[in-house]
Length: 309
Length: 309
Image (cartoon, rainbow over all chains, first blue to last red; front, top):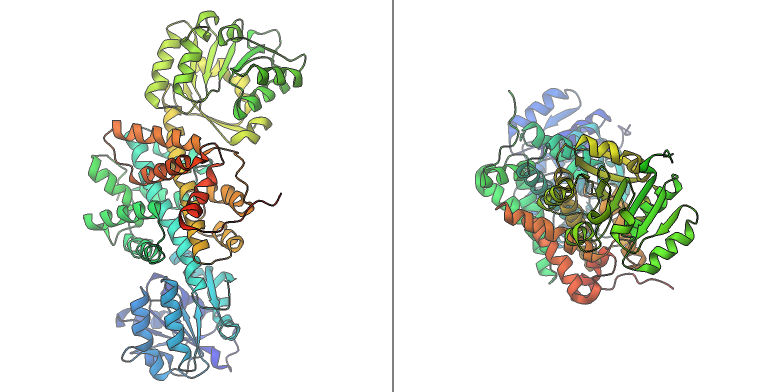
């Protein structure tokens, strides 16, 4: 439970997507006074209605940040994070010196370092803190946080991190390290989803019992966290987005950008990126990322399970 | 314990590579009279010396199969399996009608069906039974077996399977289904190894602490069975082959062949296959399959850990 007399007791959460909404809920549950901002005012209003007495809406990132000891930024990408911080009506217009900005977006390490420079130049602290675990764990306060930054930034952020995370990795004293770890995780996660979809589609083509394939593979050396997690969506024919295809066109896009800027080949990640791009191009950008299997079905005339309504 | 009075009490094991040697050991330990054949006579002699009173060597597959109720074939590929069965001095020259041939090699489903036709035409039974788990589990009698075939073939094979397997999957009544499941597993396993090597090499390029990367990823959504199993080889700089690069040029080659023959795209598996081929081309075909990471190091001038001797 946070000390309500401390400045940390007021937390701003900017971005109420599936991750931000869950994190803001966990913070309210932990006793923080949560000020929320989202470009969709109705989402902020819904949050405030659900957490009456513990939360209020703000019209801008600047208004949300005014008086907050901790500012959590959970938007879509690095450009949005930069706009939230330094754009018109941005956090840096009104945030108090000594407050900490917790940056949760997956981005290139160099972008995280650049944002950190902007923030610290204004007397604030910056924590590079990408998150992992999905919407449900965000709601439960059980995320994994891959964080790096100055010890003072960790100290200032800790009460909020304790409320949202089951696992907090302290990966170094410099911003950019957290971002790098997240990128390595996303490279693997994206490849594993694309491979799972390719394998399930090929299994279907070979006439195998897909439920049996799931049973055998999850008990064998071909298993991955993503195979175990995503293949049930395919078996149920349920492509409602828990995590969308567009997340991986973005994150594997960052992997490709970094690899190229480092003159580093990444052929397997690149093949996976192309599969997510094809799936997005075929109209499924906002569907569940297991939709790569549906792309195979569409291309090859396969029948995969369809959701019974 | 097998009934020593039954014909099943004599088992032939043909092929004493790291898998076959372990399986033959498990069978001897379970009380079978094990007749072994390997093209390297000295390996068969070593096995017999280690299992005195329980085993003897045979000069050919035909000699090994004579009088055996169960014939386990654990050679390298489908062509070798065909030669062991139908070549000069092959199993079919002398095996007794009613004996069961257990085919453990990873091969295309159509090859398994074709071998089954040859074998059953001679009055023998055939079980399509690819194995998974590695040399150590073979030695412990704790393999996973992905089997399909006629109920009579299962019944005849069962005493031997119980001695070598911790998990026996009964996947169908027709040969080829076991082979198909194994191919799906190998698609995933090969992609996951190549992705693990790509990710670790990129992490090294980004200057990350690789032991920390291992700790974080194995607890995150980017994990795979292969990442957890193979990355320690890279961290220790130990590329002694537990499973060689050449296994995956073969098995992902089968995946590519099947996919092409089905007019089915497999872009992620194909990218992984190319990485194993590059690693083999660079002189590491017989080293551990985690050597794909060393290929990246060689290409990009990275320093990965080297084994301390």
